[in-house]
Length: 365
Image (cartoon, rainbow, N blue to C red; front, side):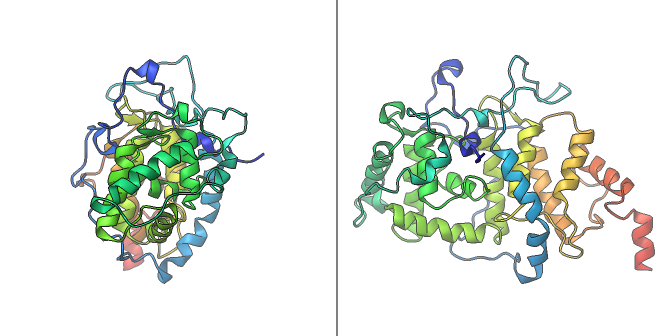
C-alpha cells in the first residue's frame, strides 16, 4: 500500500477554532514558549553553501539511510487520537494525548487519495513572462490564482480566495519536485511562510517569492521556482544556518496553532526525517555513531511530556555538537542545557552509547 502523503498536512477546522485570518498568521509568531538565546532565524545567502557537510561527512549520510527510510513511513501515517484532553505544557505529565492534526487529510471529491498529487499540475499551463510590478508581484498574484483553479482535483470553491488548501498545496509542492515523504518538503513550505503544514496563504506565497526575485532572479513561473527550489534542496543538508532556519520553522508550523508544545509522537517523526538525507544526518563524523535512534529510544523510555520550543531548539544545538564530538565531552553539568539533555547524556553513558568521563580520560592518557 502506498504512502498516504496527505497525512503530513494539518487541515485546520476553522469552525471549531473560530475565525482565523490567514493573512495575519505567521509560523514565526505562533509560539512564545521559552525561546532560547538566538531564537531568531539566521540570515544566510541562499546562493552559496558555507557548510562543511561534504566529502569527509559522507559516512554520516550512509549510516543514516535506514533511519530515513523508516521515518517517512511513520511520518505520513500520524493519526489523531480523540476523546482525551490536551495537556498543559507547563504542568501536566504524560504525552499530550491529542496528537497534532497532521493526519487529518480529506479525500478529494472523486475519492482518490493524494498519492496522486504529483500529477495534479502536470497538465496545467501557467503564465510566464517578465515580472510585472515590484519583483513580479502581479505575476505571482496571478500564479497563485492559477494554482487554486488549475488543479485536476482541488475544488476552487474549497480554497478561500487567499489560501491554498491541502489538495492545492500538495499539488504545488510536488510540481516543484519536492518529495512529501522526506524533509525537503519543508524547504518549500518555509519559503512561502506556510502557517501550517496544510495551507499556503496568498501573502506568504507572494512575499516569499518576491524576496527570492529581489535577491536572486525572477521566480514567477513554476519552472523558475522549481529550478530555484532544486538548488535550495541541495544546500539544505550542507548549509548549517539554512538547515537551522528550516528546522525551527518546522516546529512552529508542525504544532497545533493553539498549543505551545508539540506532541512527542509527532516531534519524533519530524526528527527522523530532518536528521536524515536530504537534511543533516545526526551521525558523528569521527566514528559514524547514529544518534537519532538513540535519542528516540531514550525519549520513548524516559520522557513523558510533550516537546516545547526550547527543547526542540536545544536538540538541534546538541545534535550539532555531538556530530563533532561523539564522546559528548562538550556537555557540562554547569551548562545551560535543558534537563532532558542532561538526562540523555547520563542515560547514553550508562547504556554504552558514549564514554563516561573516566573512560574518556583513560583514552586520552
